[in-house]
Image 1 (tube, rainbow, N blue to C red):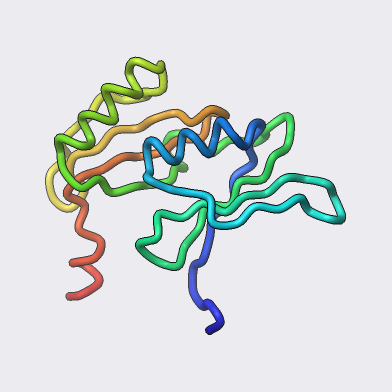
Image 2: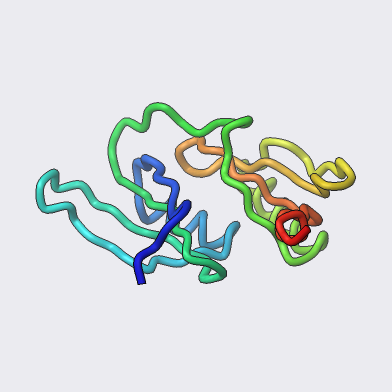
Length: 136
């Protein structure tokens, strides 16, 4: 089957392994494809959380410019408020927490911003109802 619609977002990263570890820890994503581009020699991985046919493509380059920063971000829904708080505690300890968790009410929910190894922003959230909005 051919994929249609939004299938991926690509991010430049300086260290694939650090970024893979970050997105595994904070977004539950794992490598589903890895290659060295034959033309450019650039290392590329696809990460997926296996909940839908969508991947985050990491492309190793140095230096990384521009970065996906606070208002431009990737968003990941957590399974509970407690899970979000647990991940924020880890991020706080690692110096990756950009903003403390905040409850913005419906439909935004409880959320926080984290910084990945290259400075890209990841939003963790609980209570965003994108799926329910689409069903109505």
